[in-house]
Length: 277
Image (tube, rainbow, N blue to C red; front, side, top):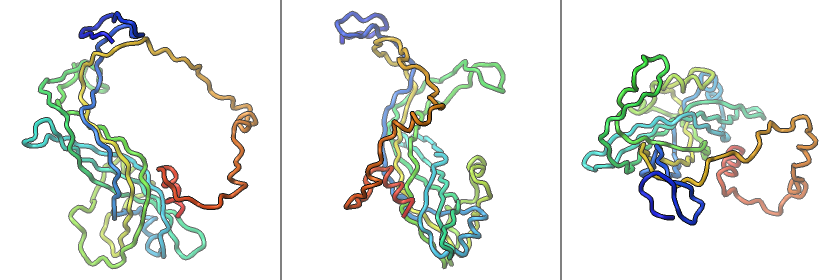
């Protein structure tokens, strides 16, 4: 590719047509984590508390990541670096044995806090925008702080273990939850109980996540052509269920069981395995 420092046509032997300036977010730093979070406090709903009070065993369960709250702050005496504080909110469903052959499912909340430090560069420009703001005066957008933007990507965690502590004589710890955001509480069908009772429940989760710091910037990039879709929009042939069934491969393994059973190795298999055992 021929060097080109300004927008315009590119004359070389490749298929690049021109170079253009775009406004986008540039990733300055990123990291990935594989957290085994032990003994997260499980805060049950009111109905779940009644079931758990008489339970004999917790078999396992599943967890759903509801939201990740992020906060970015500069690191003192370390220019260009920022601390990212994250709070993960989970809806956890446990399978509880109450003495009957069938297990009951109970629901509750778990919260996980973590912090990481990444490089996000520096910027002192004051940013204004003319974007329209709904339900506000028709004036240019307010000035934004020039902190980098933290982006957290995560999958639903794996429930690795559960345990019950019956004899809780110690008072509630300082970091026990007393309130949560309203939209998190609205994710549950009933009120959550945060009181410090005689019996507590703890869950161990396995969490995969990616964290990165981004800044808005202008980049000069090569252009090959416009992005023209090559596939046709299709709603699917819903009137021919037999045609859909013909595309399903024959489940040979269901008829001929394997000689050995291997432990799960990937995320999907492990999550399904832990949910059933």
